[in-house]
Structures are given as structure tokens and as C-alpha cells.
Length: 145
Image (cartoon, rainbow, N blue to C red; front, side):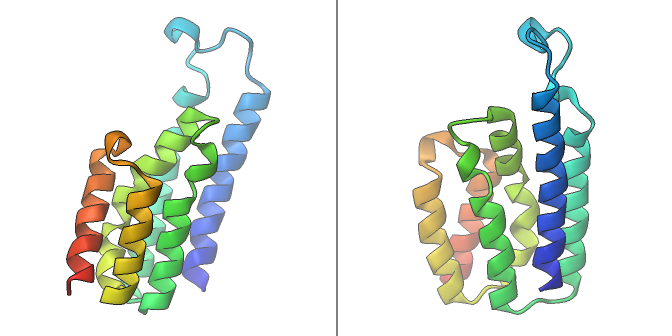
């Protein structure tokens, strides 16, 4: 599963950089918008670009449903450990869900249905970003065939 390995590599690079930035953060950095902090690091722009490139390359290989599902499950589960912790990481990992829309048609209706159920549970309505609403709509459409 080269696609999943590439996606993991992009995530590991981003998460490693964010951990490094948090370790090296000065006490008042980012407070009242002064100094920026980790949220202002260039990795915040690089990560979505790199992920989108990897996902587009994967989509061009026309993956079967099991491979697409593995990648999508990884993307959709990645933010959850950060929900109560690093909000910068949580919201970034959540915002990039929109880059996954082109893989959803590769799912079988059964896989899409299972993912739709899980996604609805993992991301409550009151905290969904526009990208997540699009993911849910695409999964719902695909599960209905």
C-alpha cells in the first residue's frame, strides 16, 4: 500500500515538526498574536500542499476500495488524538479532510456507508468544518450508490 505509506510519511513529517516547535516554544510566544508560535510556521502551508499532491497521485492510480478505505480511515482518524490537546494540530488535520473528496468515489457503497457512520460519530455536527460537511455529503452520496 504505497499510497498509505506516502500519506503516513507526510503526516509524520508534519507532526514531527509540530512537536519540535512545541518543545522549543518560548513561554509567551504567540500570546496576544505576538511571535506567531507553531501556528505561524511554514509547515502549516506545506503540509496541506504535500498531502494534496500525494492524494492526487494516489487517485490517479485508481485504487480499489480497500486501499482507498485504508487511506481515508487514516486521514479521518488522525485528528482525534489531538482533540483535547494541541488545537493547532487538531484543526489542521481536520481541515485537510477536504483533500480526500476525490478518493471517496473509489469506495464501494458498503465501505462508504460504514465510513459515513463512523465519521458522523467521530465529528459531532456542532464542530464540523465546511470540509467535513462535504466529506459527509460525499460519503452519504456514495453509500446510496
